Image (tube, rainbow, N blue to C red; front, side, top):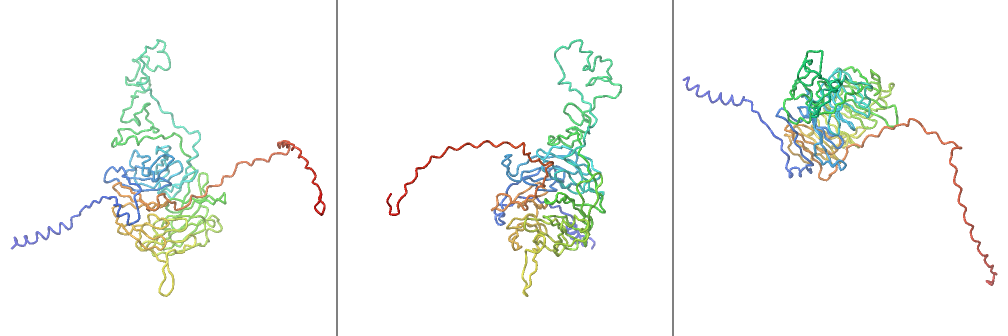
Length: 562
């Protein structure tokens, strides 16, 4: 009886064990076929595989800036890609401009900041400033704490939110005057200093001769020189910071020690041109709570004293001046009805603030700058979504795209925040109509908007009415990328594949927003008007030749006779 019972229960237990065994499913992203993209009215601009090391490595962030795209991997490697053709540099779309690989793998990968000539990377407490042309390290600085997000950059300084509830400012233009590190010991290269010609006997008593007698030397290892210390003066190759002569044991070396590298793959990426000069520390600002997002920099071209920094903590939105000495203070504060749930955005004089109570409001930046008006300022516009806004809204020249959690995508007007997608009810009323399928906005163009749904499908949405036109499964591309610069669509996968798609009718990228107005630079001095006595004398006018006198006309009689 027990044998029969065991025979019956054995298959049942085997099936239950198989059902409980976890199965690992590995997916690999593949480029969509041309016919599938044709249904979406899309074509592939370029494709590229990132140099991922293993399965633990993959794409973390993809950030478009101007005509370039910057990709960060889990290993800390940063790749700069030419996003569109540049006739000036003869670069094609999809070309890799440069690659930067840190000596050690950083912990948490933060977004980067990009300026006109430099790229700013935060690895923990270390700030790296790279050259935007070739990706080499120019400067590095140890911060007071770890960075929380990407730095905000203007033409003079960069502002970084750090984990100890502060915003620190460094100048990337002004350097510490007169700063020089201790001069390292430079040892001569024995190969280049060897001479085959016999030296004169008097040369033994010169200062250049460091070893007049072998018996007086402390060590027989090169370089030969007398020293009062008994420590061997020739360090091990494994401890050297560089293998390029002259050999140094200081931190300003251009290549790390070979003994510290996990592998010798692409060693040339580790070279840098870091300068001993340090960037200048400007000030720090203490906030009341945690700072997680990048500050917003605003400027009014009509007012020279309008440069402000805007950030938030909890439900408090505060402003501060960009220029200070040592310690900066909060200038004005505005308290919202609920906690701010997404990064702040600006357009002209409007500041857009999404809150956790499903409200999206617009404030006047001019009123926020005034201490007497900031606390009691009224919202210029307000729109209530069906759920809190988690992602940063996407702005264009004429509208703003907002995604509400568990509610969908809606298109609003600037300032008043009136809905541009509406529907008419049977009783004649008009109400906003959102697209409930969208959970992530990728990019927009004048005719279409591109987003993702909950199942990872790429949706093509009519930008005028808000209805879904077509869809395609791109769930293998698990790294969502929001393009805030132009109308290109980027799809990234953990395997390292990066695709750039665009509307087949738009070959050249179209910017979503016009470039910001340049700051007016007032002249340092006004040229004085020239004095009357210093005026140049006018050249005498040339005398005109006398005109020939015309012969007098003969008078005619009234009857016509002369």
